[in-house]
Length: 170
Image (cartoon, rainbow, N blue to C red; front, top):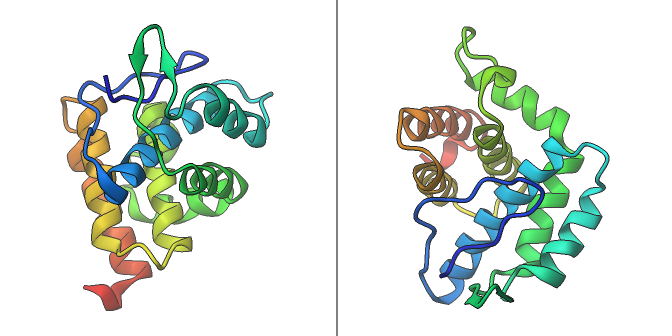
């Protein structure tokens, strides 16, 4: 199994990425970040630093119940979780501008919110990651968690946000 383990009730993806190399390690970091952000949303008493430490010590690249979990880029994972958590209000405002009025962020499922927030963090704070890469990665992650219209919604919202914030890349 190449998935990242869940904790604290975090949902598991259906088909996690198992790609190797640097891209694979970042993909796995993104997937773990979604699970950590989901855990933080459900357990508001947890500190983001504690969740990052728990994942680094007990989940990322570890063996759990006989399954060896793939190694994620731990520094990238920590940046995603801590950065997203610290700028949650700003990210939510940016995402709200990209969502349809009848679908405010609070109406979306918690995992989808985590996906959108982490992607928004990359789009707004990680210029080293091309916007199209961030959109593709998080749309793929949405496909790993959802079978309905959520991946298309994520793709549309992230495309609008990227064109608004990083239009020169398009």
